[in-house]
Image 1 (spheres, rainbow, N blue to C red):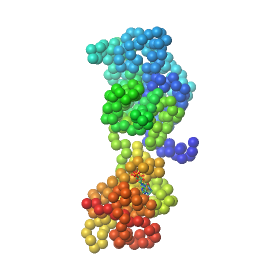
Image 2 (cartoon, protein in one colour):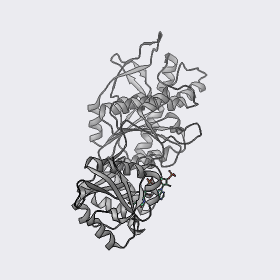
Image 3 (cartoon, helix red, strand yellow):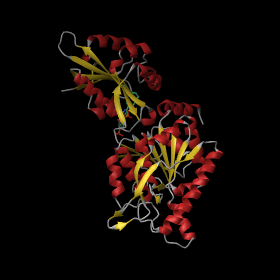
Image 4 (cartoon, protein in one colour):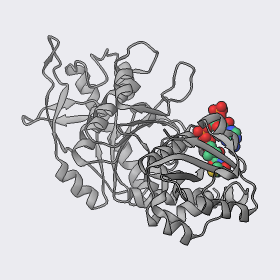
Length: 430
Ligand SMILES: CC(C)(COP(=O)(O)OP(=O)(O)OC[C@H]1O[C@@H](n2cnc3c(N)ncnc32)[C@H](O)[C@@H]1OP(=O)(O)O)[C@@H](O)C(=O)NCCC(=O)NCCS
């Protein structure tokens, strides 16, 4: 690991400290050789003061155990009918899984508690069919879960529930994850699946809005694993009800949890309710970010160097583009009075997009945003001075190359003095 990577990770730590992540392991993932790596990732998260709730599914284990017993299960996902024999096999499979998981976590010195913090009822009759021992979550005992988390104990919730009459009911683990996350105000649910979510061409689906996730979960065709569809369905529900981010990651990938959480682009699929990219006004606390972000372009002579003081004095002119809370681009809008004439002219400056995020439309978004700010501040035209990105302004944003004569007098003096010979790009804002 490089020092840059460590710095990259540490950037996220304050943001996630004391936040709750619900991690839902697919049953199939728990049979994978990669399980120890996943559990080690969980230990790392816990050591960074992220509060973890662990949930797991059991479809694969129930299917296997039923086959061993020569039994055809009535359903294996905790959503369809659970008959007597299937419940027996489910309890056996899940009890074994619970025991193995607790043993593995204990070996990593992680304090855990298997919890029955769910109030459940029988699911009842659905579409004319009595689902028998399948349960429905009525309520989550958030107080108990929060008390465990406060004591640095990881609550483990198996996909079983117990009703007021002492009956055991089979639950769907994805619905457990969603209900728990909503009840305890989790910052994220991370579904660890056996397969990634890909499009028709086999490419990773990196982001989905709630509406798209719900739509996809309803599609029976499309060849998606039924496990993924259920994660999309409950992920969309949780996100809509206030869980800010839901991730689906491929649990067969090494270090997948850390790679998903500690990078802007992630490695799995993220379902988001809001615009997770946003452009916002800079604050004095952003000055170091702005300087370090623009340093590369200053070194390449694409941007003029600016001191902390220069930025701080005009902080209201600066805007940052955040990607999941981390700045990846900047732009500034300065207003210039026109001597002897009415109206103002705006200057677009400090346009910068991090190298790792180029060619994804962020530059254009920042320029369009800056133009809107300029308009609102009463400017009739906007200019930019650029040594290397003039084609970008011309071809992508409709600017024309002009002469330095169009610059307001005060700016013209500085331009001539700098000797940079930047191209002058102009656009009307009417
Ligand atoms: C210029 C810059 C802001 C563009 O950001 P970006 O997020 O990569 O831009 P977008 O994704 O919105 O647009 C990409 C398009 O612009 C084109 N483009 C980007 N930089 C370009 C340049 N310097 N010259 C010509 N075209 C350029 C790309 O080829 C791409 O075109 P395509 O869609 O036809 O393939 C970014 O490259 C940057 O930060 N450069 C260094 C700093 C700088 O020069 N700033 C301008 C000083 S005011």
